[in-house]
Length: 412
Image 1 (cartoon, one colour):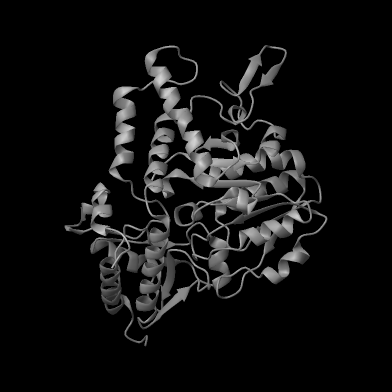
Image 2 (cartoon, one colour):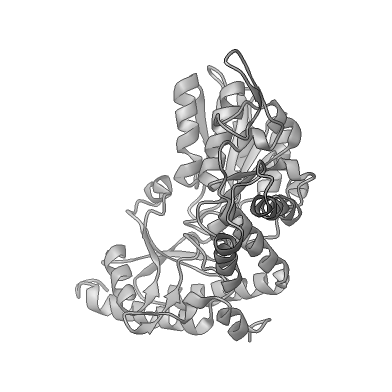
């Protein structure tokens, strides 16, 4: 039994009643992108149908209505992650842009020759490449918190990695390829004890954890709308206000200015300093609707159900002969990754697709993780609260069929 009405929940997501190749859709690619409730889709349609207009500078009715709807979302995000001020919320395209923004502004201003930036061994490429680019530009050094064979960070090595040369830490909250929930609060505590600021990549955690940036004491926190039931192409960067105010702009253009002349430009106040040009108005508004949807859910019940799904899937999949789980941390979220001896992950994923089951295959934009485990990639099933045990049963049944079809007979 689910701790809530699963049939009602599923009826609120139109795509879950769709079919793939004539079979009921089983969507287990939630770590890549969540599905959208109808209210979020309706919010997009309503904006474009009823009050489509540019915001903040128009005096006419449509612009005023759009501006009010857009601005209300900043307050919703502030409450959703418990920021201290709506001015600490910057609208961006998603987590990737947020990290690039911090690297290009705070990083360029504060990182110099010989300085060190610390990340973890399980980062998504979007939390590796921007820092590598900055290190190449500044002559800085990128250091890595190692992990063990279970996919857990080796926290005993953290104190030695936090040196007088460390100027920034950027770490993922929940691994998209392993499901590991990292002890980011403890990482922040140790970093702050040495005066080092910390960015937390919350792309996965915002959908599965109740986020409180004040409790975490994160200096920066990022998330993407499309992973939390919202539209693609929109996300948020949270930053402590004093840090944002001291950072230079990221892009130049309209809205981010206070005044412009050919001799000098003065910049607008935070958050507008970081939001040049016409923003993604419709998708920000729909993100606000997604947050409204989260707020009417029983988050504890949602979390309990997702944990039950993960435990159920882990038990059944681990019992399949020739399957090896990748990422067996004690503290995990709704991701299960695995390899099948003698079977290419892509082939197995394509077989599952013919049965209407959507999983992800490959390196999941975490190539260093795959290199650590000495594998080219994994099959990944990732769950949301709208998934069911019956869907997991279908996955397991068809995985068994895939192995029987694809595995060489010589493999036990």
